[in-house]
Image (cartoon, rainbow over all chains, first blue to last red; front, side, top):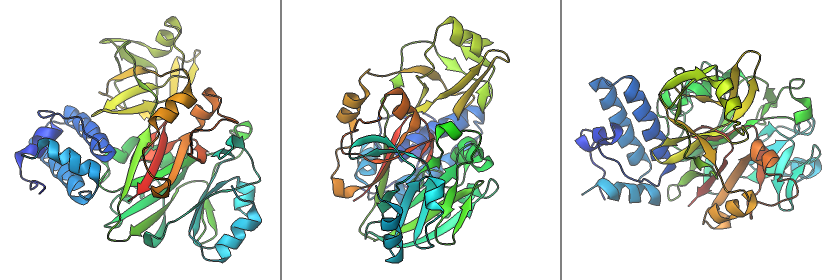
Length: 77
Length: 323
């Protein structure tokens, strides 16, 4: 399953909490938890974009892991 | 668990090792392909144990094709994630209560590349009877150097068809009690925002008769992350923690089933023994759950002063598997 590009709006929706899923991957969960906290402190669009790109990077760098594949399937249509 | 003579043989044979043991025994080891951290508490095949005379040995599997050991301090630890190899696993040892430990704990989520690649490890410690007298250390076995301040990290490259994954077992969940927040990040707090009302935190804990063996628990997108209480100073009204609290995060007092050993067995990773490379568990679990002499399933490893699974954790078991 292909990982959406970094510019896909799904990543920003995930880091901003507009989309929420019960993810399996610990890396995804700790990153998202921290990202949401960072956005609550600084909601500037540039910060949201930066964190969205980092989240996409986590999926891309760990795409061989089953947990990440399962997480991707939750929002990748 | 090995005695020093056996570990020396492994090192001389060129084996690649992650070691845990008391300082006096690690200091006798020759240079070689190893890093190590000080601690005298372990979970062994026979149960929890205290020893200064034996070393817990983790040998790197053949999936690790290459490694490099780096040392960091509080100003360079921010590079730890970006220094990690493309397909790899990095293992970090950082002595407790050092500037590097605190810098990592407070700032890791903001480091470039945070959580992008698997980082696992532990906070090194000492015999609790020596707390405040003897500093914990991290050993760079490739150089023979050991650090009382800083971090030692082994960055490992894996074979292209193998991947590492870090995960945790945390028996604590958020209880159904008060919502607790803090106005500042830090390892201590005098005030807390309880259900929206700012109040002296030490007083709150006393009035509510809170059992501070239970951690504060935050939900990181569903991952239960603990912050353990270190102490309550009623004279100054300061509550201290073994990990930082973060302003804006919602915490609740943790709750867990009473029988740690049984609960732990239920939540053990469903993974083949051969895939599990390393595990560690928190000294607070060892003490509060009375783990000396008791086993946590088939899982063995050092019992540590903090655990690292991407970020600093408390009262948690951390493990890494390679599949």
